[in-house]
Image (cartoon, rainbow, N blue to C red; front, side, top):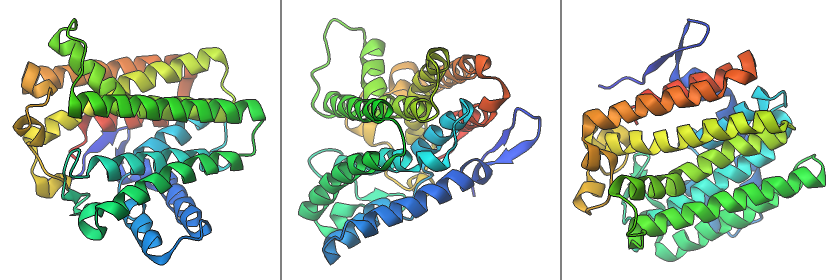
Length: 305
């Protein structure tokens, strides 16, 4: 059995994975449940939404958002609707990415994917629903209109970049002038990194961060966003489907660009360490308030699923 990794916190103590996510995940899970309940959905659409959103996942993106908010002096309770909007957008991407026309995955978080459980039509509609619910959540934030506008723009921009990355990854079209490693970074920074970067910046907006603090959060988000996907590439070739809860070796079998495929496993691990350090360094001006973000960055570098 592979145990969840422990993280050595900035205080020198050891923190287990569950300690990093338990508080923000519980807050977000309750708010997600409430958002779906309030939508007054038909029973079969409600069941599909519950399946695609609730009861699974670490809630990494909203956790990043809430920790970023706290790191710049904000309160996470008032930022919950933005965190819910972010997670609904992420869930939309997973539901649609799993469809036969895209990644054609039958397993997600150890359970059948939504199109396997409820059919392709329902999966498409449930994914569409996540987007509209997400932006509806942003109208419920107790913030100034200018901040609300920034949050909408950030989430929309991150989502657009995510779609661009998925297009490159699935249908090609990468600029031929780029070297293979540059092409790979372009895919990853869009497909996965953009929404993680948006999470950090949305947290900054919710916490009324000044320009200097926003620069710190943006640099951190850029580093962990790319690092997350490099680790994902490594897990795809080093872990079992049973452990990570989804099919493995698919990217290699489909001929997709990956870090291990391009650089090898050991060099990919070196890239992870380099990005981890870049993320930690970016937070230095924020002081001890950013310690939870530092711990989360370290966890993301050593996660096993």
